[in-house]
Length: 214
Ligand SMILES: N[C@@H](CCC(=O)N[C@@H](CS)C(=O)NCC(=O)O)C(=O)O
Image 1 (cartoon, rainbow, N blue to C red):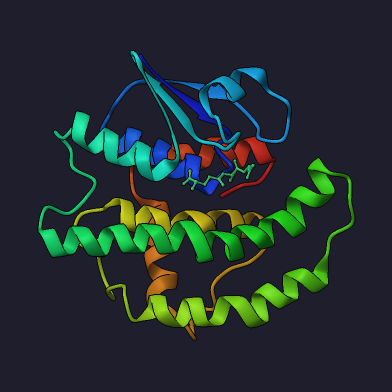
Image 2: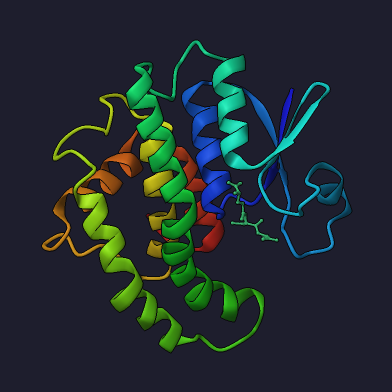
């Protein structure tokens, strides 16, 4: 059986869990935290990051690598668009979601939630305000030009939608929501992704673990 290493509060792990759910692939989740000295994680993830995946003799890390492997190995329910140019655009949006967007949206989560909870440090509201006021607006302005008013980016839900929505789930735990007056399209897309049948059970389980309701 596939083994997935990671913590579901990671935007990258959540994306992979969503892909496994959409593809209806059974897997064993092995809870693993970076920076924790977890020796089992070190064995499967040489860079110490989550997620990592083991499928039979194969061991890989990095959510993009994992999602591409799952798409090739288990193609029955696709999670990337077929058209070549759509696929390239989906790859780009996945990259965007996993870099600048994840740093900013999950940064809010880190400063407001992880610092006090996991590291017993005070919330750094100055860093949070800097992200919210300076870093997020241009990212959201760009996304507003990239996502549709209705439905998902390529019709069916793909990794591109997941990669853009997942960091905002983290930001939501830290009381950040996208201003739907200023950025109506990306705000609505995030809500549609969260309401997708494959995501609802995942989000319920992780919110319960955080002691929050969805
Ligand atoms: N590009 C990687 C990023 C993974 C990543 O940064 N995960 C974070 C947790 S959300 C992590 O493990 N950080 C530990 C570290 O940077 O050492 C992916 O897509 O999987």
